[in-house]
Length: 298
Length: 113
Image (cartoon, rainbow over all chains, first blue to last red; front, top):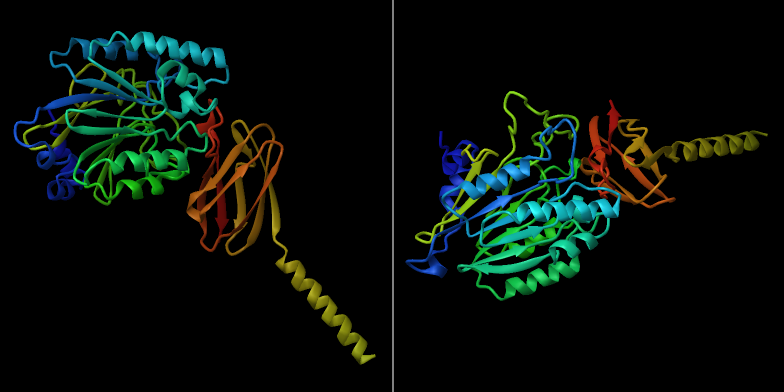
């Protein structure tokens, strides 16, 4: 059964905000004009390659399965972005690099025009991003796609989960090039706002970052880290977290401890999935569709 | 004689007041991936000092509901003053990523009524 994301937003109590402001998408109409091209991309997150344990008895297969599912889809995304925790952490530097190499090999099978990567704390916190940069390049970056400005922030290579003043200055300089009505997508691993800091679901200097983003009227944030969908507004900015491709985590503060949701043998892969983000050229709206690991809409 | 007794009484009262102002120190150790003790009890309105010592690497201590956070350096000690005006259970956690198990490094400050 198809569940329209806008209807879901209404059910979540965000409908008024969505309808009133055009969010969680944004209107590109002003800057792109009529006839702008539609496109969509996929957000995959928290693949934790190298993890093993009861929360996912299929840990060595889930990512490969999703690569096949994406490849089997008739509609091809313009790109795939991985929003961090590509690998599961380890104190062993050699093993970390081995996991990164294996991850790259697996996702290199994706038949999509382009892939982008962001680090998660499991990839980059213990060595301040050294191995990550060897395998995936820069820790933060920006890129343009069909008139939309994408900014990928690093809020993990500092183990205290901060973006840091140097990167915030870079962010300011990137944004200074843009009109306040420009369509902007910000990608991060950790939530930029205090979603549930008791579980370290926050960015140490996230409020500074949000204050820099605030003047831009058509800006949406996509992130990972919390292994579940979550949709939240800070002012006019919508923040959307993605599911994991390894194990789901409980809703913020819903249980005393932040432990993985147990594997459901009756429904293998339940709670895991990935996201399609459609950007409509006609009216500039962004629509989210969630998929499970079998490629079915959920 | 009366003056001497009054003087002694004042000294005793002053010492008692100083003792009452001295906060209780609660020692907590941090190591991968636990605090010990992981549950700390104080009384509502009590002024205490949490003395955090890391036994291995840098950790963090974050108690968001009371607006408290500190770095706990390797081999060092961090002192955090706490006065809780509200009874309840307040979770704290390590907010400096410390490895595979970081997510389990948490505890609770229990403020008894």
